Length: 349
Ligand SMILES: *Cc1c(COP(=O)(O)O)cnc(C)c1O
Picture 1 (cartoon, rainbow, N blue to C red):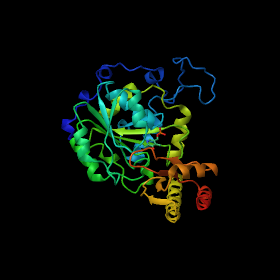
Picture 2 (picture 1 turned 120 degrees about the vertical axis):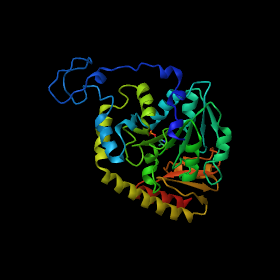
Picture 3 (picture 1 turned 30 degrees about the horizontal axis):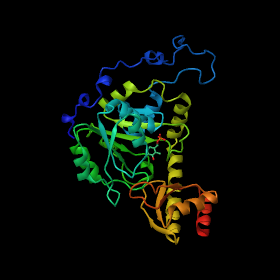
Picture 4 (picture 1 turned 90 degrees about the horizontal axis):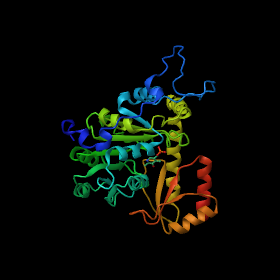
């Protein structure tokens, strides 16, 4: 899509377009470090580290991310996990019982859940047998009420990345929003689409601290997009959606990317070793390529193998009910010790 063709006002729901956002006390005036007295938010004045409301715009965290990712803070929105960011996209752009979205199963289950919650039709266009977007089928499915296409790359549960050509074709020929969910991008050697947000104003990238960054428990999702998209999402997000403890923990972790990089390379080394061992197992039929911290494996009888593993205290994910995923199990890569135990157990099956 050329930026001249992009008109955010045609995409936003009418009620959101005219919405006056809630102005919180902390939005109106934030400490500039001087000795101000804050009697505006009905907080308890006794200091304990978290007695004040958190910064609704998370400026410290955004400044750090902006610097690391080489984008402007105006292109960033933070959420209570990327699941909240995805939900905000539905609520801002998709008119219940009217608009539709497109997803590409087998993929992340939350897109369907959020579509159902928001009463939005989800047009499902299956991936090809090689787990790539079926671009011609996607364009056949698009109509004038299609607001968003969700692309998960690297994809969960298949593990592969979508080809650059197919993503580009969608971005350049669809007039709605294209979300690329990059939850696993830090495990991939393919490059992020982040530096394409200037070129494509309809592109939304979501990332998360839940996977490579090891902070699933604090709930922090990151959304990068054009300023016009970010402004709309900002308008409807709950004012204090990212709590103070999360902002602090995320800041510390993002400041120490060296540690994250070491853990990621450790996980990738473990993943590759696990793949080699799995190849030798008699019940393994196929191991799919992975750009993520998990491996999708086709086995002889997924229900049976799943139950056997569970019996021996190992919980994996059975993905057999997903289209194109008959008899597949998804293994998340654990620590060396955990993987050794997994291998030992698999050898006993
Ligand atoms: C795990 C995962 C997420 C993470 O969501 P959070 O709410 O940030 O924890 C998002 N998308 C996909 C595809 C995932 O697998």
